[in-house]
Image 1 (cartoon, protein in one colour):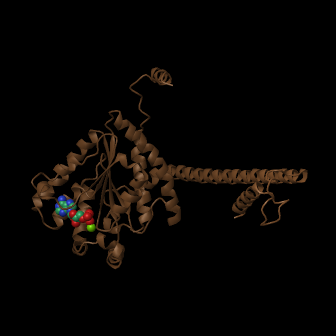
Image 2 (tube, helix red, strand yellow):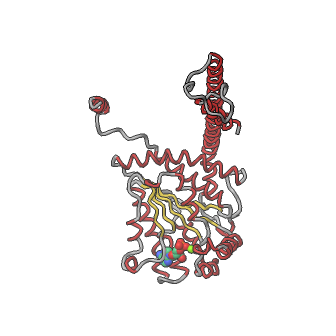
Image 3 (spheres, protein in one colour):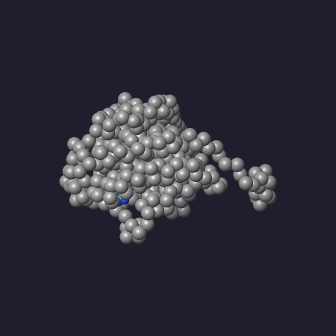
Length: 370
Ligand code: AMP
Ligand code: MG
């Protein structure tokens, strides 16, 4: 406020300087012939006013510079806090991830869906931590992207599974949204199209695998062919039964070709799922997210639990492990997946690619064009 009034005062003064306020009464026109001529006294006053205006302008510039400096300082402080939070988080990252890793004998029905394993902060802490880890993810992803651009074959594949409302879409928005979309290859798998049905169930999956340099994200995946296909009896039991081994072989090949596979089962409680479905029905802005088949699938939850348990038990390999993420707290699930991605990307241990040209020679060529 103070700043703008100073500015307008200064402007006002400058305007009045064009007339001769000291010798001409307000509203009266300067006498003809005298225009432009000023007495000694008038010149002195004008000088004083100019000086005062200069001083005000200088003071204002100083105040602006001070405010800008304070803002830069505050921004740096916030950035430093985020970096410190990220460093702290990353120091505890692997221990937290270990808690999510599916282990033989663990029952999905025993998962505490409201828990936040490995993270004891609040939701606000979690959101801050996600922003902090996001900055790092973005840097790591840029290296992966650069690696791909220079012919590298490494990539990451994040497989997101979960019952309706588990938060798969939110992970895509809030976690993958933290990195450059150029480097993300998202594929959502719905009911197979007529063309897809004419092929082997892995056909559409192979076509969607990430290329070198990118992060592939599957929103649902080939696992639907072991879940909905089994629960809804879309294929005979011996057909889906053969798929566990087939999927393991497939994923081992994908991993051998350079893709780090991270499989996440987002696990929500029936109560939380009820609340989320209800929300979708109550809010016009969420109606589009609801599908009447969601209630049908919800009624089959016991069958889905059995099918998911088999999937997690039988396709939990070293090269393509499953992580079961409690998902009643969306912020936690997002943070957990960001930690998983962070580890996958940092384990690639990619440096910046060496240029395929002579840097010194190119510098000389560029400078010659100046
Ligand atoms: P959504 O992810 O909510 O958009 O829903 C996609 C729907 O497609 C879900 O009901 C899935 O069960 C279904 N779906 C995905 N893959 C398959 C598949 N291979 N066979 C049958 N249904 C599938
Ligand atoms: Mg749905």
